Length: 88
Image (cartoon, rainbow, N blue to C red; front, side, top):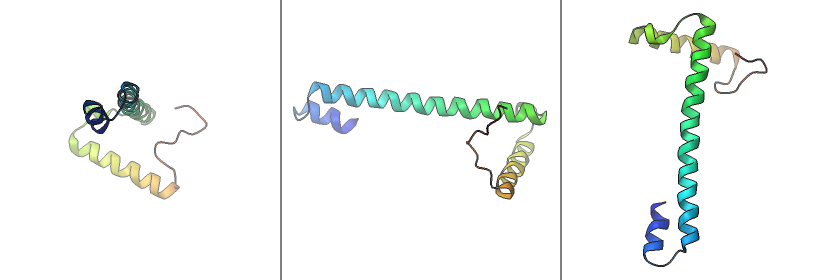
């Protein structure tokens, strides 16, 4: 974005190029925000499934939970972030 803005200010890029870059930056920010939302929603689903909510846990309890979760992924070969065919 900064490169296109600089090029536009020097007259080396058109207004359309600047608008395209701004649009791409907004879309990238939206995709990032959606990824965070999806993670939090999936995390809430996992916590609901195991019957425990990390909001009520201490930092040590949360760390232990994530260690167990990572051990499960390593043991089963499951890929975190990939949804299964069943809905949580």
